[in-house]
Length: 448
Image (cartoon, rainbow, N blue to C red; front, side):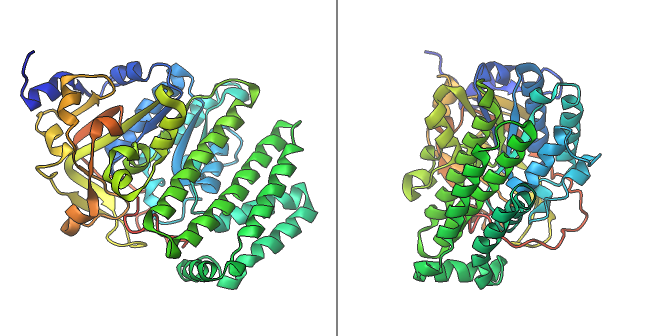
């Protein structure tokens, strides 16, 4: 058997990315007939991660008839974007359609890379029949206030009597002075101490009623679409209430798992909605590596009991899903130093000597894709667990080892990895961060 040095084994398996139109041929070949392609990111603020995901997604939509993109964004804000890209919204520019993304961190979706992709998708869709236009859907659950408002607004025109009942049920949260950070903490504390203070019965009853209502709206395509949106907002309110209630009195992985289960449920609902004509939809997902990788291959899953969206999709769909991680060695990133703080261009420290990123850097290649699903010298080399870096919306270089590294087995976590050796910060649309809408800090304490 030929014995290769580690860097030689990785170089032999690497598929260079040169910035041309055939860059992702090898990845598309690996994807094959898969129905779910999950594209990650090692940070929430790196230009190359967003640009590469967009380039891959464009080819999946153009050449392989993918039906939708699901993102780590809030449902109501993303649904406004969905209407824009499908030609059903009055906004004439992507920047205006992205106006709903006002919750910290706004730069995560309000940036020039997302604008470029959204403008392309709308133009592409407008050349197709309405029933074949690709959509964008949000998977996250931090929009409790705006989702409650969306349910009430929908019912106000569709079923006014039910709208009043929705207002009364959701008024339960008024006891906690809204859902800013202090209101959230009061709700988490009081609902944990006394279940009678919980709003869970009210939000569950609202969800049940919304599902019954939607079941009756089956004839007009507009009614079906609007009812689907309203049901997803009602389901989000139900799941967000459980998420917030878990924060104080249950362990850390409980809230993380509730969030990723909600993402998986939302993805399944989108699949059912798109496939209601009997076909099997194909969907691309954009989210952080920590959500899209298989948590069973990381210390979070093995030691802390955390699960992930990627794990849940892989368990459900097997070889029909492909998980793609992204890594970088050094460069700069758009991030904040504290929750609700302003965005800053921060230098990303060179990766640690005991990390996967350093092994990939040692190849001497700038940008490349490395397949990991099939047995190879590169796969065998990477099977030994190493540290892997994860930067969310907060980056603290002074505590990087504690704050941003965890142990993982890369070939078990992902089917392929895209490495950008020197990366750069994305460009926000807003020069200064807008005043944040306070729902909750994303998955304390890491902001992933």
